[in-house]
Image (cartoon, rainbow, N blue to C red; front, side, top):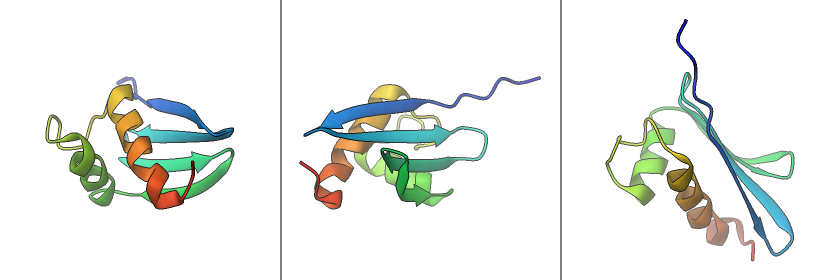
Length: 82
């Protein structure tokens, strides 16, 4: 049975917790503020969202924690946090 990677990255910004949650099995990418989902993308939009800020290493389909952190940082200004 293939093990599913489910990388999760958490950052604190001015007392606000933001998390990027990516499910490799489904390709779903969620940005959470605390326990609230503030952004959610499904493929191919999730792959485009990742690749547009981190480049084409895996075309957004297998992000690592560093890439998820970059996605979070790009979302901060869009979410008007910080």
